[in-house]
Length: 152
Image (cartoon, rainbow, N blue to C red; front, side, top):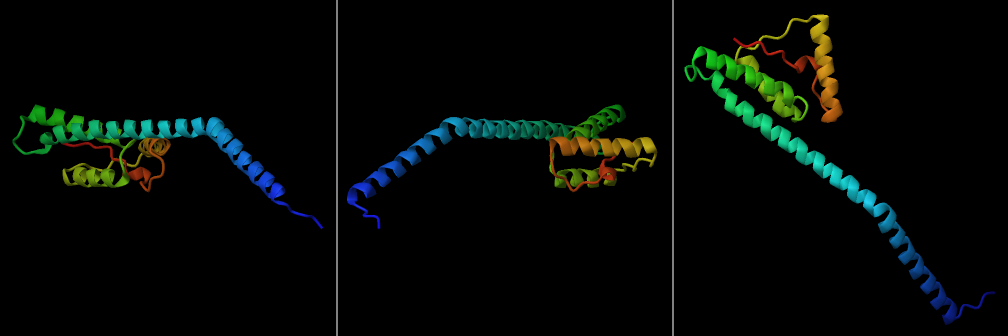
């Protein structure tokens, strides 16, 4: 049988401590910067998406005036509505599903007519959805929810 002495226990304890120090050092020097870089990139992307949304939402709120009856002359209302729709198309890349669904509800209530189902429109809607999935990620939106807003 083995005779375990206090010296052997001390030696094993020292070796275990050294292994922990070596592992921790390797982990922090090799993998640590990769985790930090990944975290930094994720934070930068989240900030960029936030700023994109903020800008588009600001534009949409500004150009919402085009939908107020009598707030602008006919030409001013037409321009504001067109700019609102431009911002709508852009938020498809960045905004949560719920925001897009609510804006769709508003556009339909404002007289936006669904696009005719031509092969070109259907393909364009699918293309926009794939762009969204590439930038935004998971979504429950369907291609036909991208509205070709033709507003009077």
